[in-house]
Image (cartoon, rainbow, N blue to C red; front, top):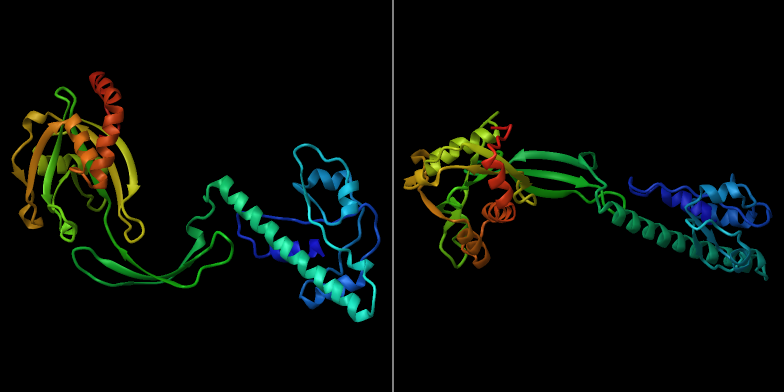
Length: 344
């Protein structure tokens, strides 16, 4: 019955866990027709299973050896050290006495106990496997987009999606409605002068701060959106000139990340660029984009302090400043050795 339940339940396991079950005993007593009947009543067919004697071949192929009665547990062959042994004690329904109805009731009771134990075992195996893989078990094939239609069309377009996805525990989610802000590739760059150990930042108005108790003019790094087919390195050079009047001479990739994937598809490419801070300053920005950008130059240590105290409190700038804080010596060494990023 345990083998039958595992075979039945395995059909509903998530794709990251594959389980096969084989049953055997210290002796072969044949297939009990009462067990076959009870299992059939629960839509599990074990009529083709065979009564087998446990062997070295079966033990070698097994990851877990499960004993389901005290006699089997006490007399189970010695297992190799890497094999896991699990004892799940059940009453033997073949030993039940009484009327036919009472005996069948005992088979039914033990059958359901075994089912619950196999469910618990498979749930434990799922949790163990997920922990081993750190949950990295799904990809794009595990999401089904049922519909996607344009919603709001404005400064930030929003699509409305109906979708479902696979669940860690197995099966699929219910149909879910999600709004998705549609954004082009974003590119940010921390402008750094290694000779003066200064960074060039910008301060500008941000609507998203209006509901918070602080000035909506944030201290940020230079950033912009990539046009169709525009390489991130080209965006860096364009935005550095437009927003801070700086020419980029060398460029180092920091990282790529998704800004807020719960509601937006925006992907950010982050860089650190070498500039001459002496050329930076003034007020810049494109009138057609309603930009009003003030250039701010400060020592890197001052920028780090601003991160610590909340003077810089937006993700792109925090990541970039902290990265440069950790990599300052490496960056200076690379640039002093005429480091040239291949992407530039």
